[in-house]
Image 1 (cartoon, rainbow, N blue to C red):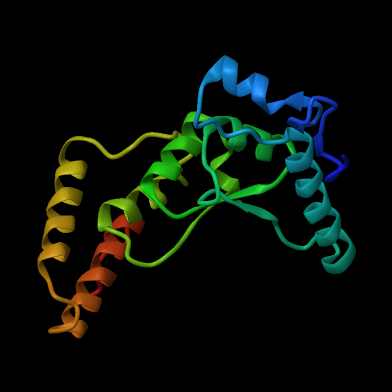
Image 2: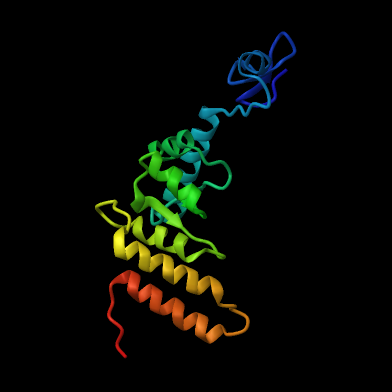
Length: 177
């Protein structure tokens, strides 16, 4: 029984992904087991890339949303297909780094970030790939602790002022006051 180009029911009545019997996979690897079609994922990556070319003249970057499924193998596959990677957490950023994903093609976004996550996102841009250390790391930790203690609803202006000061520090800008 044909289900799709990558999913089928084989002559034994078992679901098959790209011709591979999922019952045999479950017997070999146990359950629960996540099985994906690499061919289908690559096809979808290429479809998005072609759409970007066709409708936007290639002016833009297609980014895989890693929150859908983030592991080193998927990051490498996405990289091989030329897509960017959309990350929303320090864990996803860590996985991208572990997969040697090019940091210039990582989009780190979202709300409700800790200051430490924001600095991790900022330091992904460093060409030497080094994280802050020594006194710099201690200062970042102190700043993160201070921001966590502030209630944004009670003193939004103060929170915004301190956030702006932290950003200036991260960018190496001197305070003009």
